[in-house]
Image (cartoon, rainbow, N blue to C red; front, side, top):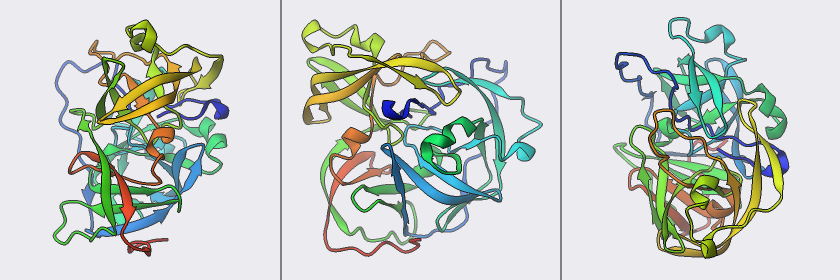
Length: 328
């Protein structure tokens, strides 16, 4: 996930896998078990530099803020500090790599995580030090909510009202939706990761875009940029320092794409940050070459990620709506 350069830090918590894999294939990680089947609920959020921050959520007896991050594959990423006495002593720490560098990751057995009225248990969260990021979010940051939990919902972001609604999928009595779906962008979920990736073009060159609520800016990989024909290649602007979740620093550059196509829609003059994306440790190619963050996702003030249909929708309210059940 990436944050604005004005905030002088850059995050990508969609970890690309451990650098040192065991000789034997590990058992599949336990998946979150939901303890109820609330059809729909709405929570307020604070928009911090383009990031959707949910306040005062509860995890294993601790309360704090969580960032909604569609660019994270884990159900939860948590700050290791507040959970130091609860971290696994049977699983050795792993060295993992994201967009910005390496980080030591430990496991936290989640007894209960409460997302409003939705409660989950029986899974492991990724834990590493996030204390140096709290000054950017302005509150007691506990972690990030990723694909492992979000896949249970159609997630509706109301940027104008600062509300996020969760419509449960695969429940006996789904809630009615108080909106109609307008434009849509199809995405695929990267196997084993859950990243929502949409196809598009820059000029005639195909590009795969990560749709990331945890990114305050649109971004493009510098290595990929060098493969573009000169007329379509973005020209780098002034360098700005960025710091990752693990404290790793790099320089990013502001730029502009003359035209970018996402799905079937075209954006003239798309602002982007040019950044060096880290390569997966296993040598596989990146599943995406660009990241579409807050500037793209918030063009329509009411949008949704439908994980069942694998569609990103622009929405239109069908009536003046009261918050769904469970609003706080």
